[in-house]
Image 1 (cartoon, rainbow, N blue to C red):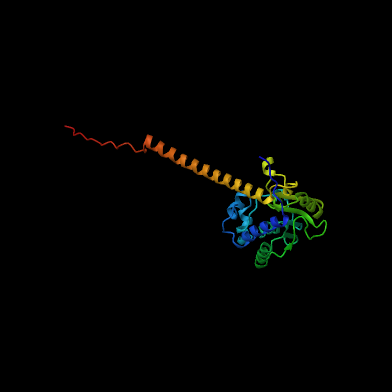
Image 2 (cartoon, rainbow, N blue to C red; image 1 turned 30 degrees about the vertical axis):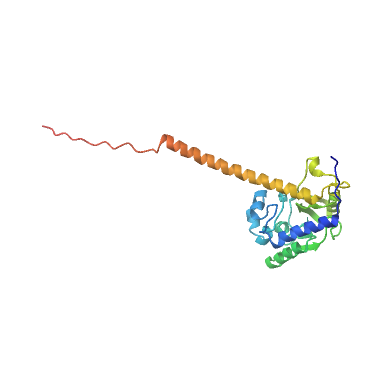
Length: 262
């Protein structure tokens, strides 16, 4: 059997990614191969108190893969750039941390994602947040604009990941911080040898991304199944213990017997 290289078309990849995340923005309750929404965000580590302070619709379209704000250590009055900001959940969280004296800039290539984020920003009064259309490999922003650059589950979709990291370095001020959550591969079978992985042919980043998301979804389901099974076994053990020993009852009261004295 001989290996066959699959022709790679960056424009096709871009179209697939845009179509997928257009649906994420417009129909967050639709059928997707990955998990989304508030339950996911809380399980990843987002504070319920923070989530309560940002637009619920942005949380509905959240499709991140981790939590990194404890690593970013964002301070009041800083400037944050979010590469691949989507419908805005992380930009709104960052806005809470930089405060009114700070600034948050979201960069995203999908029009529908940016439009949703802008609508929610305007409605809820997040005046320190702005969005620009662009690619995370070539953000339309000046050098050294950011104290912190963040990104959540997006770099794995870039065809040139090295270029993304170089772009993050360009955007950062001297001494700035770069905090991300993303999907990585450990096995050669997952990496492939295509442009998405730095080679000349092979599988696209989207196929790797979809496979990894599906694997992660199965892992979450397995964990939930095991937790439910543990709860069931605990209940069964308690019922068994109760049936063996029986319910505790008070001893019968002694009847007082009076004898007549003759």
